[in-house]
Amino acid sequence: MKISKILSYVVLAVGAIGAVLLFLMNGNFTTLMDNYGITEAKDLVKDTSSSAFAEATSLVSPMYNLTLVIFVIIIIATLIAVFSALAKNPAGLKKAGIGIVAFLVVIGIGYAMAQGVETPMKDGEVLSASGSKWVGTGIYAFYFLAAIAVGLMVLSGVKKLIGK
Image 1: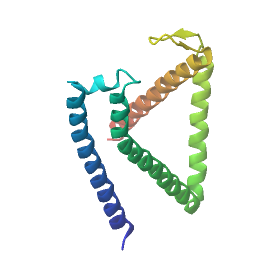
Image 2: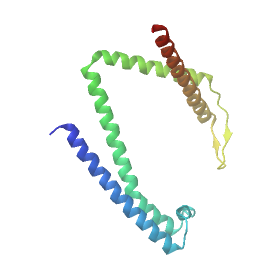
Image 3: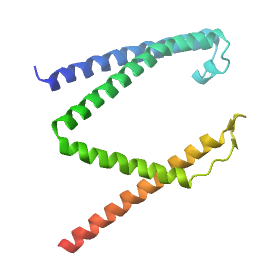
Image 4: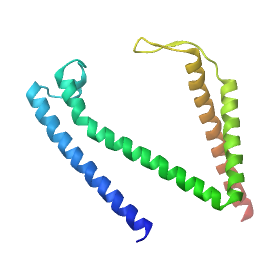
């Protein structure tokens, strides 16, 4: 049996499990809301010490656990696929290394440009200067990578125009 056929059956099984859990969760939420006289689901979680919150949490837990299992499986499958492809093609390993180093350089430039300032948040907590600096790093890296992508698309378009 081909791996693609096996994966199709696995995806079908996980989808069926997810659909059953979603159906059960939605039906039980309706019953739970009727039992507590609540009209909107968001009201179930307003008071974290209530029994309604505990019951709502127990309804969501199976779906959350399925999501975590799928997430872990996807990460493991991705890592296996990447490393097996790199092992089969050593030239690809060099290209991957260059890409990783280039990405780290972009992050380094973003970190150098970012400023860290303690920032009060809406919930009353304070974002540390270090946390603020890393947020700024992410924003600068995003802008830098977006500018590179747009520049390469423009360059590609110009090359196609000149080549014709």
